[in-house]
Image (cartoon, rainbow, N blue to C red; front, side, top):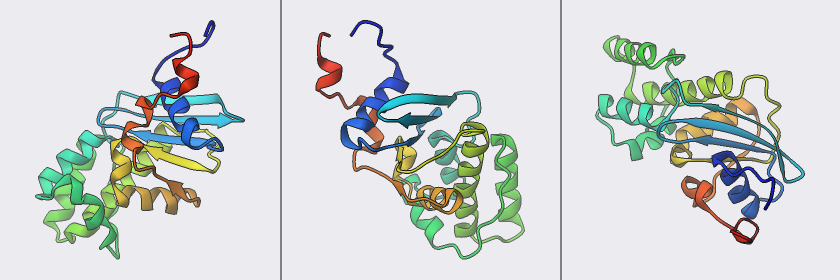
Length: 184
């Protein structure tokens, strides 16, 4: 495997390609960071990572769920109950948290705040990690946040494409196939 760079971008791409050989865009949002990987003909052609801003990561959603008194595993279900998502400023965790508190104080429904947070995560992700990137389907969403149906729905509404989530989406970067195991 001379000349092959092995890092988490490669790991996510190879794991995803082993199950979805036609993938063009990989969205990944984990607990602490997020990344986008663009693939053409089975080869990574571009990527970006965000490790600086917590707004839009699993830890951010988890802390907001706690603040709202909701289990993070139920977050997506709450979002789907919303008819009128609250507009939450999510360019920064501090702004998002203060906006969330303000929305709750002025009487926004909990499900509308949750749906607003899901949309805010997607907006933040696309404006920061996906900025200037040509997002093309098929799109695979992975990382722990991919288990949140509210974020999946917000991605699909925003990008206008189906967003696919594998049952092992939270483990995709760890999937090894015969290609990666040769000569190791």
